[in-house]
Length: 490
Image (cartoon, rainbow, N blue to C red; front, side, top):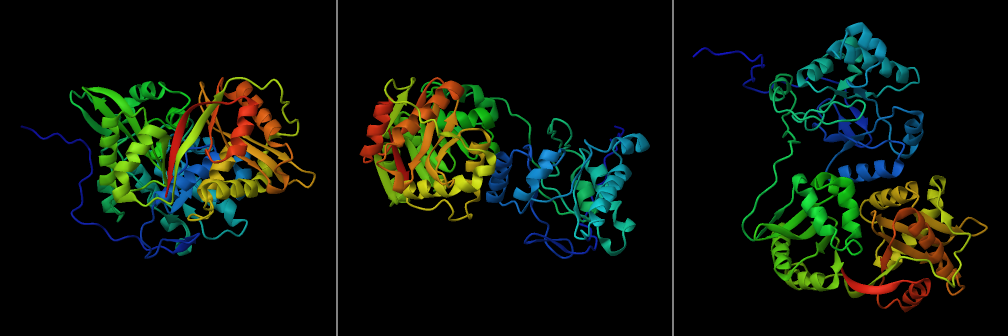
């Protein structure tokens, strides 16, 4: 049999030495020189969408990412940089048109010249520590582009860095499509002294066909079946449904795994396992299976929350290993309405919070969270995740407040989870010095008007049973109790 060459590079037998380069600091992270290879990635959001971008940065940071890059193709994106970060990047999919005309395609030389030209613009303004990240769907071209700038600059100013997951190749251009490939990656990385990393497999696997009673982690191909389960109770499941509709079932985008319980081959129950552990349409057998899986994985969530019955059973099974909880709220009435009250006029001073009012709304949000949950949202990561969530709600027009003459928040609420069938009002708060002055009911009526007119035909919320004042207010505005939630806080 005659061997046929496929043109693939030989795999080196040993890792080459890293090219000597000058070490710089990207914030607290050392890059180049003898520093270890850093973990970095890039956001997929529009950088001008500050809330969504901060959310992705927070999720990447929580997953161990040390450096996060953002793209700035427009002036709006550039204007958002003071709130986010400063980076330089060169994309093969978005090369300057003049360089494409000069070289004919995205060659290593074209990528290098583009990088040097952009870097020179920053050097004119006395920037000296410049880190370049080159992207191309062909890893050989990418590595060759990294090699180009090295001899072109005395003092080794321009520093190549290894992008994460190079085996799962990414080319960023218009549309930001991801493409996966398994060939051509390891050999050039080893030849040039780049440390090997586990490639990302972005291929969609075929759906599982099960003929037994079992549980498993759902995959993107299970999306339709999962949405059918969530659709059984659009009000109670609004929080998880909203996340799944946006992110699908990929754990990286969803922020956690979705566990499925199968009865005789049919998906019948779900459990979201992320920052919260949430049983969904869970039968007693499904709850036992989810508890077993949760015990094996260990506690990673900050709370267990969901319909009272399944959540209580889940906690009874997990408490011996996970307890004690910081607090258990066993009965939280779930309330809904689909109409405005006839006898309470919406407060005309309650309006959407503007993006430039983040500094005004944040103290009220922190005060509400601390009062409601018992701990500050600024603990741990310094409030990065919480600030990102608030910014997302403000940016999407789902944060509402009334301000006094000095610009202080006296009433606030948000429309959190939102689907085309139901939305959930959350974070209702009145400043302590204004409580008892009749602001809550008109304020809620105003938020409800926005919710029903602009978001969904049904609005819901759940409230602590011991908060009798809030429950009276919600009943006055027209909410009715239709069930109960339970929360276990750690």
